[in-house]
Length: 225
Image (cartoon, rainbow, N blue to C red; front, side, top):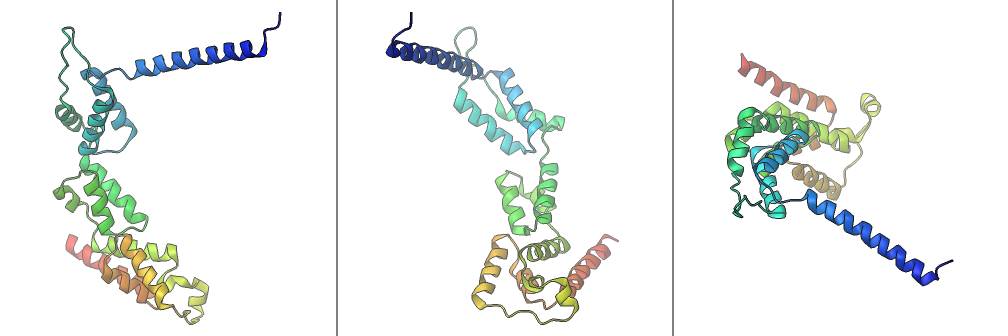
């Protein structure tokens, strides 16, 4: 016997509701309140998946505690969760390394054409201490190289014309003042020093910037000796 359409729809709705309920119960089960063991597992999983700092990991665990709550012991009392001690232990074991994070983040940003100020902001936001931020601040040569890289990627300054045109000594196209101001603003937003921005944008040929970079590299080499 064929059921009336409205009864079939009702049954489908009931089955859908049951499935949703089951899924909801499963989700709730996965989000049980945290005890020391589950908090440790969360910390290890996060540290394994992401390059992080002690401050970022601590903030992540605190958020998870707010979201999921704290488990109770056998007597109905909330268990004690020491986030600071857990993070310190992972730092001690080498799972979390602020120094390595700062070094990698600084290198990543400068090789993408960002300046020293952007590096400082990124490390500060990640909770890296001032001393460590200073140790991994880009040097003068690295700052110049990053400014040149951004200009090359965006076609600013002497990079506005192709290498062939420069080799044939073709004159650079005139730059509209409003466009130049936008280029300056873009490089400043990327964290470059104003002096570096002016040097890059006012250079007539790429060779001038290459000499400028080589000068800084030579000075740093002398300092290392």
